[in-house]
Image (cartoon, rainbow, N blue to C red; front, side):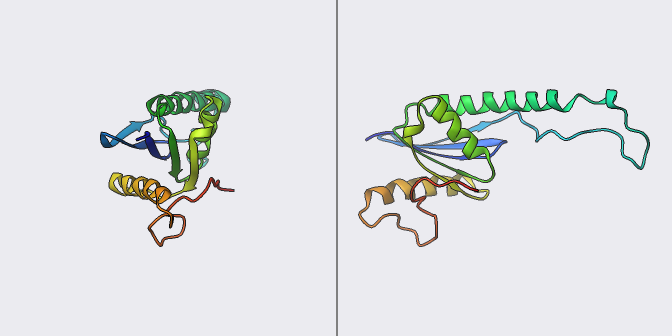
Length: 157
């Protein structure tokens, strides 16, 4: 059996479900990204704002970008052996990770990219199993929910 995997991802953590002959494995990877940088400083109600009190926006953005790069690279390294891959999750992280896979020359392994809300590890594993079991079935995914089977490669606008 080929190695198949699904990744639920946001900017704070990724849950990787791997399916192979040995069974199912769930792995978590946590990023060290706190949140997108926001300008910090004194409240207008409490006093003046001095530019020297906080780091420049561009240096904060560079730090965030560097941390996300390390996070995405660790995910790519963890899943490099997968033959088929689906990505899903809320926000922009799945698209950014898809781009990282393409940059690594592994973009052809991505079978689907889809939006998904927060999910438990059990829900993520069930969705990955459902996708790959449905891909082998002539009727497609077994669920009646829309987008449950992640049919085709899609992206958010």
